[in-house]
Length: 96
Image (cartoon, rainbow, N blue to C red; front, side):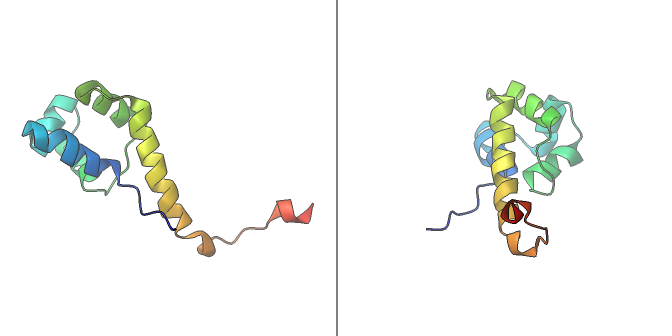
């Protein structure tokens, strides 16, 4: 059974952090010490969660940076696997 796409961490920020607290992207960005554009890009899945953003989200919302980074990695890896056929590399393991 194929796995469904893991959510982008920005979706989690929106639905599990901002909305329950009644925070706008503008207000949350101020509290996180980032630009509105930076947070908006993450929340709208236009940018990934960086190590620095993971630290800030962790401190603001009570999770760990590792949790945010694992979510980002799971999402990125799933996206990459959808394009596996497009990757043209030599299989060195098969040559041994």
